[in-house]
Image (cartoon, helix red, strand yellow):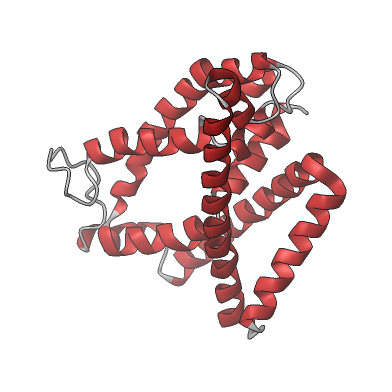
Length: 227
């Protein structure tokens, strides 16, 4: 596959309902310092494309766990696989429940009906279409999400007297204080906790996570995978 749909797919995969619902709440309550994650993302992109990805791509493997067996042994491979499965089950439970809860509040759809419908539909198209179906569905989903973000941004600003008024209110509420150089690691968000901690956190997702690597190695060339 080419890099375009794969990039959109990766973004959609890790910009779950938890991110979409949680980040605005985070900024509303604690301020916009969350935007500093662009620093950690920059480091993650460089480290992943230049250090991790070439190793996986040139190894001719189909999963990160296959690499663990080549590098160590079967025990390490199986242990990592089991941990990943457990983590994914827990993660999936949360990210399916969150949009179902939002749908229930907005439309009145049955909460658990939404959860089951989402699970069944996703399992069905993934089984029939494989990785290509996942990637293209994610790419379409990402476009829908961007349109949704822009709609909320424009409508929300219009309802509150324009973007200038929104920024003024945020500033008056001390929500635009972004850079904090405090070295205390117990602070919620500082330049150091986000740039350093965020880099290591997201390297685990974009650098070695099976969901990421399987998409990257599906690219037709290593250059496409890096892009």
